[in-house]
Image 1: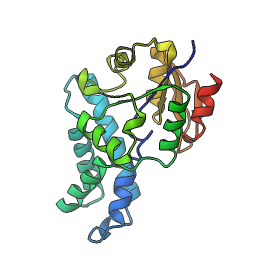
Image 2: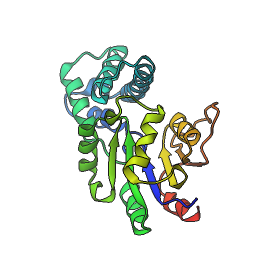
Image 3: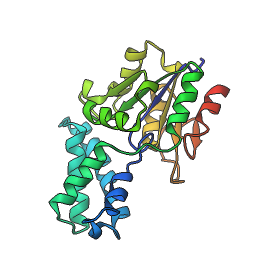
Length: 228
């Protein structure tokens, strides 16, 4: 089936999840983060994801903003950083995360090719709106879909179901793009054609399904879509 709808995960795919720690480390007053920001960013992201999976399994759902704060608290304690002002600044920066540089042109090229575009994310509606507005990409997206509509995090099939309802399309018409290998694998099992944006050159996850395509970033995605 032809691809007419391109759906993106948000955090780590369109928006750089390391940006908050990197930017805070360069600011006056947060010199204690300078030598550890990469570790903090890594631990923050890992705990954020782990908490979504655990909450999806147990059914104890909270919104992604709480999960993000809980993950940061763990990462800061692990790094022996206890400055409340640093925590507040990191959370503020996460609200306005920097988009990867190729994102606006990539989305613009998809719109020029008459493809529907959207976000499907664990993020809360308010968080996603903050990031989309900060990046200036709202006009390039047809829908921004949050798991808060179904009350469970990825990789629940209830999340992927949201795409067909919002875009009135079949799963076979959807290209789903994520920087998370497990997300791309789950979406492939669901029935989407999938792209794993493997920015870190990581090994393939050992799961039942594998993404159809692997890219190092999003710059070549419009060409890939054009070939499908």
